[in-house]
Figure 1 (spheres, rainbow, N blue to C red):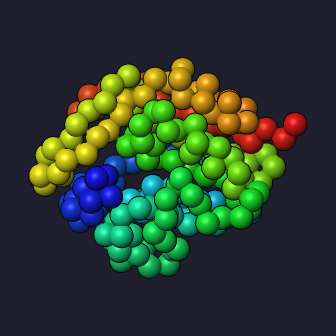
Figure 2 (cartoon, rainbow, N blue to C red; figure 1 turned 135 degrees about the horizontal axis):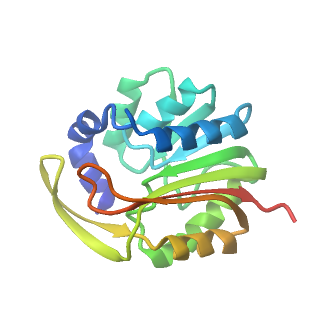
Length: 205
């Protein structure tokens, strides 16, 4: 359902989110702090969509690749950023070897997974990370499922979840991460909900 929806909206989505980070000083600061910590290692953006965050991290000197379930999104990302690596893959089952990546970014890509299934995803992300690997999450704050039927100028049918930051933080801790940064901010502009950001380090003992 989610894959089909993003295949449908891929081109329109890429157009609408282009430049979406402009003026977002908090988000830019978080990405810069993440980049400083993982530079020199292999990094994944899971649920990369059209690749804008992957490209931003690359511009910060990060060796980053993007993965996404949507083949059309990957096609768009490869066209927009041909110098970067993108592949079709699920965050539920990464091809990365155990302990092989220095960091993982999930930038609004956990919001389409039912909350009950997120612990398994966080465990998979932990598996792929090297010792002291860094996880960066961004998601919409709340506690509800929203059915989306018309987005980015297209008729679709899929779910998005507004997630409880306390619940997500506990899941991340349970998946053997230590939380280092946790931010909750008010909505700005046309955002319907507060936004949440979490940075966590893989626990090594």
